[in-house]
Length: 73
Image (cartoon, rainbow, N blue to C red; front, side):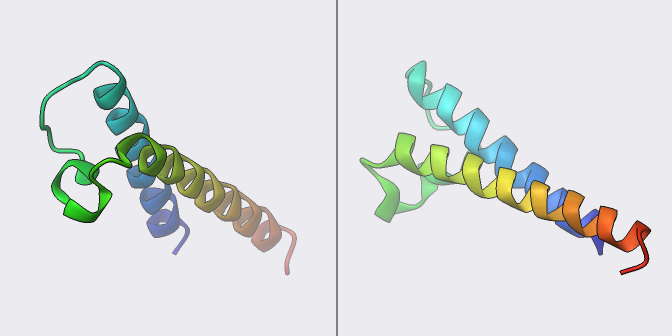
């Protein structure tokens, strides 16, 4: 289960950081998810930052979960 949560964290972080770089450098459409959801148009940078935050929170949760399982909880 920890591997799945870590993978989700990495996915969100890649989508957020890559999308943010893409939007700040005026890159064209790419494989970043935000580019293909119509409701996000105009909010791309804010959504990219939100994806980074979500990925970070999931990653911290994953690390906390793994450390508590080592302690026998």
